[in-house]
Image (cartoon, rainbow, N blue to C red; front, side, top):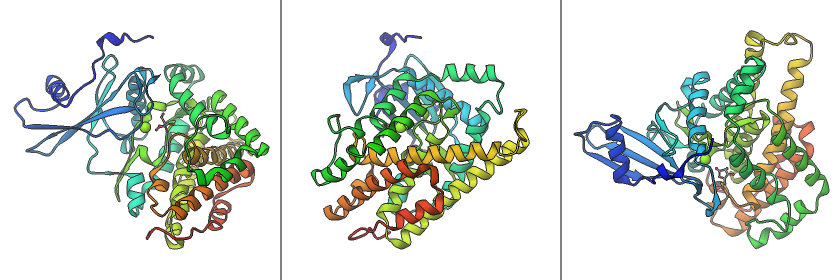
Length: 400
Ligand code: SR1
Ligand code: MG
């Protein structure tokens, strides 16, 4: 469906409040405050709070271009509807890990949802040294449930294809195809990196084994329809506290290979593992192990109790599926480590390191580990990845 942009109007703090009142989502006689708090790459986010009760709501609005790239990169407003539908879909499988959607409007490209400001963005918290003891178990459970319940093992084949059709998301997939799987792997294509990283970047561009494996991973992203993915499951898409976890921002949702969600989360833990001192690294290794253990345990339990496939008890089938997810995931994780280092969209985990020598050493390490994961993905498990991480020590560490 083509949207008619003539009904689109960018909200302001004032019109956001007027809209919330009109929809009955806030009291009309309340004293309300609104702030635009969007710090992501694509959208605006309005946070409205009742100054007396301190209760709030969030209005997220897409604009017809990628905010970070400017109007030169037009982007469908339909992504707002995809995000709202994905939140509703994922919440039906994992109610505790997904925010409540109160209202959405496809023409205005808005989603109005639960205020999560009592939580912290997981990336920020991890950089600050927050432990988030349940975070990775929760994400493991979330990925297992969404991967299983949206797959052919649970949905009737025709129902699954209908869901997949509704989540056809070519423009957002194109961002991933370009920024994650293409540009970072060719010297002549757009990129952004510090000059001191040139040699390390060249060693990726000149490594034909890496480039061939990335071509295979990109093909898998483009062609496999295993399950409905979040599609951008980095630690900036997660709110967390010591007890609670909420996964937000599924505007990149589409039917793709399960390893992509697993790999993005894995890679974003690895940024932390690289930048921390040996003791801090151990905390991240625990997250990594808990994430993978919980994912595999939850997926296995769903397989054993709710799998509708006549092949479910065939010896070796579950193990084949889990092994495929794992191999794909480490490959995708490698691509994410590399694109966030020399591509166009960086991560604070690396960029907050003030000391230049340490920062360059950290970025050199993420490039090397990225290439290692891509090339060795068939042989890896969590202990092998931890061993590889331990070999990268920085000249000075954060205090974490
Ligand atoms: C142009 S958008 C760059 C990145 O921001 C999003 O969060 C996705 O990760 C995308 O690749
Ligand atoms: Mg996002």
